[in-house]
Length: 212
Image (tube, rainbow, N blue to C red; front, side, top):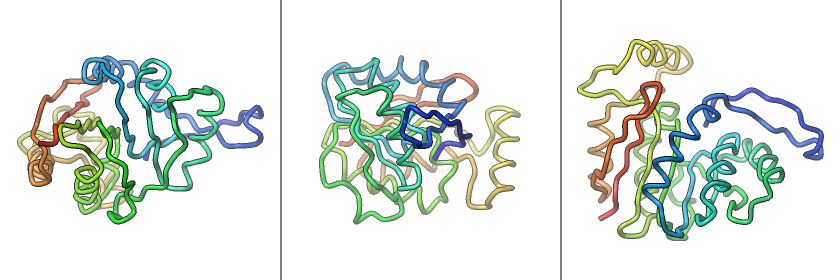
């Protein structure tokens, strides 16, 4: 789900290790929030693990978390490559997860769900399906943590976000930065209440809901 470019690393038995500059930049600020939100040992499901960078970074710095990766099959090779390099016992191999297919979501109950830079890549129907799936996968009292850019009151929070939205829509009309209010309503409809909305660098947010 991340925009990536590919680098080759022969230590991974010819596997493709991908690199996301955005994931590299935002890992530390996200980590600071996750440390605050998840101080105890819990199970976290990451939706759209992308390159695998976030999983190994957070897994290394938060060893008390069990981090379950997931993504579409075409992204699994890179996730495995990053995992093989990091060799962390608390980061688990990726599940195949299509957010648009609710009946294929994992049956296990997680304490938290994390997803980064996915809502603006998905269509609105996929975002709706993702929130329904997160509600099913999350235990009562569990947290949903969504990182990325959002609009407020139907307006962009920066000129760079407006330009980013235009570039997304040039790729596909179904893509684009979502309105916070619409996503919050979606969360509420799936039994989640807003806990906190964190201001993040580069005009991004980390929004947290709790399942009631």
